[in-house]
Length: 379
Image (cartoon, rainbow, N blue to C red; front, side, top):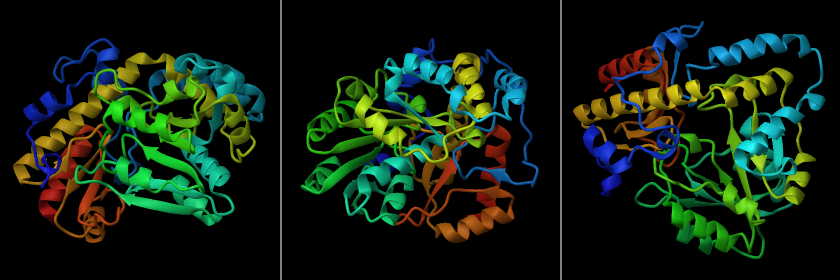
């Protein structure tokens, strides 16, 4: 059994993870106890209106922030308008954030639309796509509906992408390599130098797609985004989203970053686009660094709580670079989903072949306590 698969305690995890990355960039690692912002500032109810605690879709329960809510109110008068002419300001803000030209940004209805139109563009008519297994399926399953063939390469013993095996699958008909890093559902992170070298080497053979939906949660210092390779003009596409750390999943807004000629082709494939309210919310979210920091801190607090309880319960888990944790339940996930649903908690869907593992999203501390109570009762 690999070291990554063994339970570790909180102190070991903090040491191994080197909690820096996004948090360090934002001015140091805030203590879980010394809170600069009161939780009441971003208070949320324990339950949604249907009485269910949702820990199944990797959402940020604290959003939208108060700053974003005010921006939404101000934008209501424009909700009667089509969004096309309102996109310019947000595209400029995203381009400035990423350090690229505005012609390299493709706005989409959540990053899922970006994934799907890319899968359509490169998989149509029998194109081959290479991906890890399990990983996020939106690009893969959508492309298969239009005739693509997907080579699914099992994760290695560390529950990471098996890059050497993926590279062996490249043929003259390979149109795209899909990387989800950090990976969903495992939360694992590829070594930065290895993934960058992999992308550089193979972008000369085919298109490489880096899904960075969870990039904000990475705690490794100086971890590279593949946006740097886009800036070098390589055949690389990066996707980002406002659904996670910014807490805007319901407003459906994401974007792709690609070389101008690639971005133009993908932009022509956009079907849903986004909406005026979502764009105004995203603009405000980019400026609201207090909420950004708060969300990262609360996510670390929730993960630490889960780790400590999994340790006490003797459950294996994978230290996560995301806002969810993948842990070994020892029982079939389908029955666990049912039993936890009966206790008012939604947990992650099945991720074959790991049918006795569960992906649990981080939520409020009340959510976490309710989940652990229910899990103890079930197990």
